[in-house]
Image (cartoon, rainbow, N blue to C red; front, side):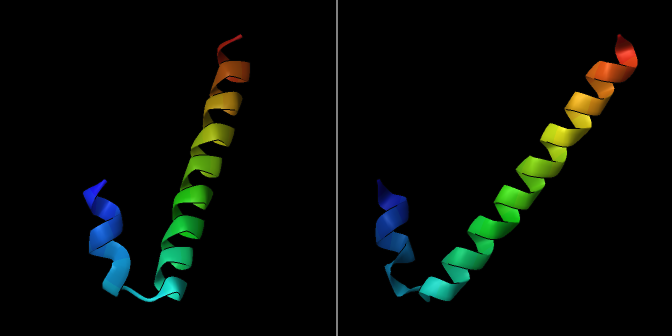
Length: 41
């Protein structure tokens, strides 16, 4: 896992912010697919 070695120099807060951003994007995409599935049915 080279990503971990690259992220050693980055602040933890930055990692948390990126993680939260990814989580929110995944959550929005999940809701969109659910709504799309309901719409298709």
